[in-house]
Image 1 (cartoon, rainbow, N blue to C red):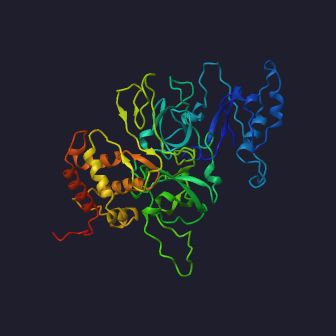
Image 2 (spheres, rainbow, N blue to C red):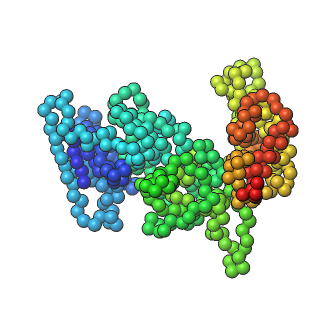
Image 3 (cartoon, helix red, strand yellow):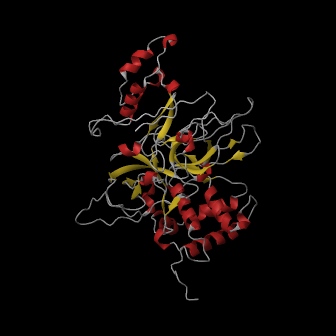
Length: 468
């Protein structure tokens, strides 16, 4: 169905663009030029490409019929599988009394129909488009949350075109600027999945392989071993459910190689000793395809392949000085301060990973290196045995956050992917429960060791209900 809001424009319908399934968008007739011709399924509209070869002085606007035919092909409406009958198009033409008069049906414009909860395509400050959801609507601005990104990246976009000084575009109907990659997912595809132990507001991403795909009509599988999500929707009963695009509940089974050490070893079945499809959260687990736990490949992780050469970071100095590696400055000026980051590379031996000094954190690094090489403790965390013993109700513990942060630190150390690690997350978590360490001052190593071991003990205390 098509509707118009003026003699110089038509409104195109796109299914599922807003919360109510309202997908209409104002299309300026002036924009329907030969430049609008684009390939559809590897083909080019002949009627448009022929007109584009004409001189600039003889440009011909695209007719409404040509534009509708192109849109139908782009949406897949003209395929034999989906075309069940004639496509009915309704056009509503409106003429205003003067060029400055308001349109009677101005409310049909997309900017006037946005509501909180609408799913959209949203542009970020790098001018890239991502799937998103509207969180707040004001008179001239819209606040959006980008799907698969922490809330700290939420942005405020203009509500209307050519209004204000923002260089960003207003939200667009869902999947008009982004890819419908979820609909094309198949076994063997590569995706990105959140690390199961990463914090909700600081997600870490791993590459994963799709082992199986469910159907939209399948009963949802209970999800176990997944990551904590920041955005949830609360239903009428007050229960919080994961945020899903258009509330679609299709699921996929993924294998995350870097999570293999976070799950207990699989007991081989005598009937099927090679059960590679067995669910072993978080190494092999089901995730919601339309949720925030999974993203398209190369969204957060660079597509560049890893090399066996240890990585270093350099910054520019004066010509007479030698470049300094491993550290990078804030503004490329020597002496302006440094940012320590984890550097990817192959360590000389398993677990032989250096730790950056975060301020005066040598007290922390020395204890972490010592405890890291106590084999029974390290194996306990790497094999994931700690997961089932986390005590979230112990008032003397941290709800499992210290234990989870330490497990994440060990996974980075023993993954064989880093030559140097900045234990920033470990320092932040401990500093939130022990304020005396929430600074860059010097501290006693034994004092820190005592707090860390006591924190791990209380977080993993097997006595859930103490008799005293």
